[in-house]
Image (cartoon, rainbow, N blue to C red; front, side, top):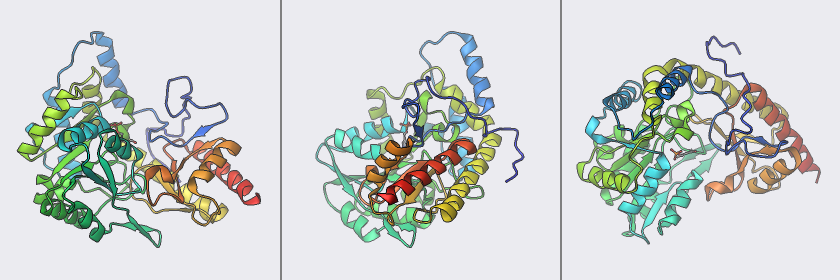
Amino acid sequence: MTRQSKYDFDIVINRRNTDSIKWNVAENVLPMWVADMDFQTAPEILDALKSRLDHGVFGYADVPDEWYNAYIDWWNRRHHLKMEKENLIFSAGVMPSIFSVIKRLAAPGAHIVIQSPVYNNFYNCIVNSGCNVVENQLVYKNGEYSIDFADLEQKLSDSQTNLLILCNPHNPIGKIWSTEDLARIGELAKKHNVTVVSDEIHCDITEPGTHYVPFAAASETCREVSITCIAPTKTFNLAGLHTSAVYVANASLRRKVRYALYTDKVAAPNSFATVAAIAAFEHGEPWLESLRKYLWENRKLVEEFLAKELPEIKAVKGDATYLVWLDVSALPETGRNIAAHLKRKTGLFVIGGDAYGSGGEHFLRMNVACPRSVCLEGLSRLKQGIAELLQL
Ligand SMILES: Cc1ncc(COP(=O)(O)O)c(C=O)c1O
């Protein structure tokens, strides 16, 4: 594995005692759970932040034109979606946006469709808004995932359903949805008068050579029925800076979303939020290209390790995210029990797939956005833990 890069992702940075949610764990624990990366962000972003810090005045911040232009250029150039300034709204985060949109667009008691197994916070947002989770469980067959469109249509056609939250690309299964799948979802949403909230936070972490399709770019219908949440936070490891955007092409929908974000007070940036996003999209591309290569080498490492050392566990082939979805259905315990056992016996902290809802019961999610040496340590603990499990 040779890399020609001026960025060094092999450096191990001690994140303990930095108030990191991921690393606020006991000394023997190796955290490979929460979806953030153990790498420093791009030096180009650090420089921009340092220069903002040096100014020393941190009054209320506005959203500058450069912020809109940075998003518009990036999505146009890299993802072939033409966005317009008036259709973009700043938001402090994807989950704050989704929560706010649910509260504004869905009355308590409404049904909201999600495609399980899926990001666990979708469940929390829906339940905490007094709405009902309706799962359109993904089909898992021969190691691949697909959408059960008949089931989806049945759930969207329920008169109590008014939102579908799509995860594009999908966490935790790591799948990029095809244009055909997205367009089909858009048609069903239109037919049944359902708004699609497309969470595209993982969109830039894709296998080198591949690209995701923005939901709003899949068809004119998709554009009209959707609210899209995008951010530089997964891509450039900036989650703690609370910076994202919402794109809504449909004017009447946008009016509601803008109202929701403003009244929930999530549409105002902190002093670093727009600075980081602008630097990321304007100058972060070379860093991102190196990162994607590195992450895919880690994924490959996991796949090869499992094939050789732990054939009982299969890594589901993923083309997006740095989250590896491990099929543990050949083992005698559920993912949840295996995760608990691994943490107890080896300190390896991965998540049992049932956290992501129906269909996740026999999986583990492992975050491989870490230096290679850390990834290898995680795999070695996995092997040791499974060997002990099988002896019981
Ligand atoms: C699919 C998905 N959406 C949203 C988030 C969180 O977004 P934010 O930190 O902007 O609220 C995550 C974090 O893991 C995620 O995986």
